[in-house]
Length: 46
Image (cartoon, rainbow, N blue to C red):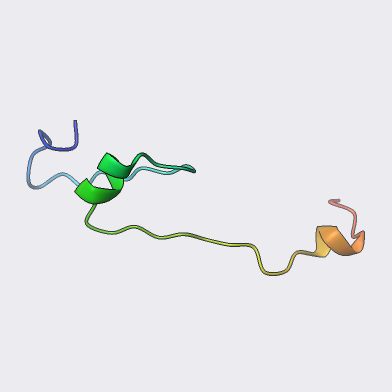
């Protein structure tokens, strides 16, 4: 699917643990890591 998409189409994939062949085919790869979140200090989600 990635190699056969039209040139004018942008394909966005999300998720974890992407296979190496997807990473190699990608133009841009980012990784987001949690640094700080109020939940871990006991703040209620409401």
